Image (cartoon, rainbow, N blue to C red; front, side, top):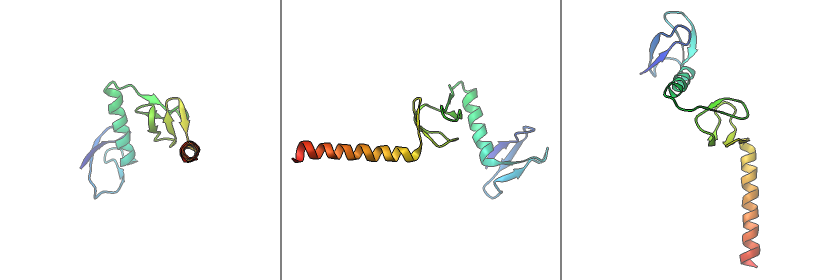
Length: 110
């Protein structure tokens, strides 16, 4: 069981696993997604706790740190101020691996 606040009126609603993900507030009648409400609650708690919040350089979404993390908003990998799309990360890994194997072959095998 999880307690979620309504984004409109702020009423606490108890949600369990047997209820649907989209629920309706009994006080104001607004429907909202429980998963999104939980994410908003966690984000609000982190900001209230005095933690420094960072923003993604690509989409300006809120992130917890700036190094070696994937942005939840745009899905890009962050390396400080540098962002990289997931497909390009794999291409760069393959290229670096190929260059390392070529170096190993030239230096040690021949």
